[in-house]
Amino acid sequence: MDSPDEVIHQSTRLRITAALNALRKGEALEFGEIKKMLGVTDGNMATHISALEGAGYVEVQKDFVGKKPRTRIALTAAGRKAFAAHVGYLRNLLETE
Image (cartoon, rainbow, N blue to C red; front, side, top):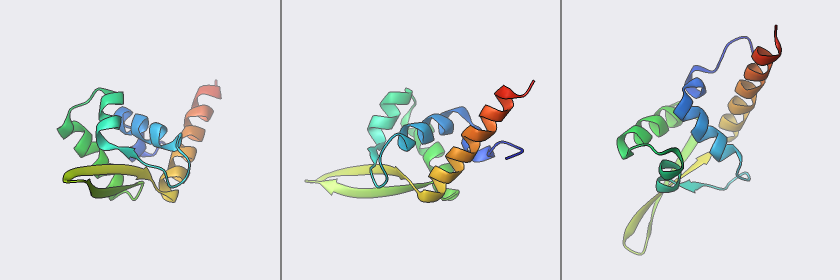
């Protein structure tokens, strides 16, 4: 990769994808868990999730636990591939003199 993935490169989105990439395939984190980890607002988090979802990097799953709504976020196969490529780009950047 010769240039950064502009969707993932933004620091909050990079942190979101890194957290999701640490999970096993098919696992998801709740919206509130990620928001708390990153220390961002609901609106900020929603904006970044929307950008990642638009790129096909995350899947947003909405359901209910009892009567309470729950939103979970999972990294897609395309998201894992994009994250790995972006990390490779960053490694190459750091190793280049």
